[in-house]
Image 1 (cartoon, rainbow over the protein chains, first blue to last red):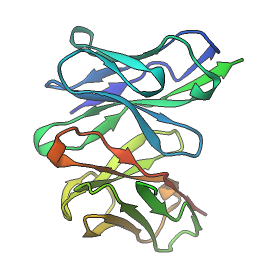
Image 2 (spheres, rainbow over the protein chains, first blue to last red):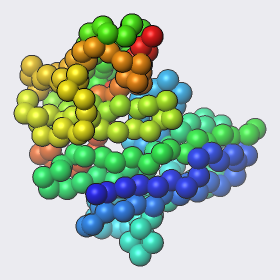
Image 3 (cartoon, each protein chain N blue to C red):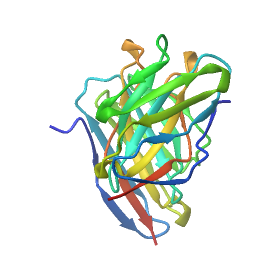
Length: 115
Length: 114
């Protein structure tokens, strides 16, 4: 069974600082990986995704993530955080084949941005 | 025009009642999902329908019954509501034909059982 771990429950950064949110997954094959962002009272918005090919993927709002198979990780990064990035971030792994569409989410990381 | 919409946005009801949540999508996707997000923000899949056929049915009490009248709609009916059913329920959609596997989420329905 697939699983996702986000080791950091809460991260605080200053506006303009760089950001890295960690995500580790467990899956028996090549995974589909996603990062979603949830603002308070809102639904989840897809930031970026990895399926195959280039292990460094670019997403919306200046985010990027790198798939490292050897470390089973898919960390999210942003070089300069804006106050509007404050939200909760979820990493997810997707199943292929007969379990199509089954996304397993991590526990989420809350990002607080100080001015 | 909202891609994935849910009604109602908020639902407050008493234990033992029966309630329904509705989801509609205008993306033309063929697969729809229900997720439950508990008070700790843990998000877990409940059901998935592809072309009106149930394809994922996680370990969910049989008080929960999804129904897909057509490809654009997926409703969730809950019988005999319990306190533990209080959560935010999200509908999501994807297009299996493109194999992109990405899911688009609705705004959520916050259910409070008193």
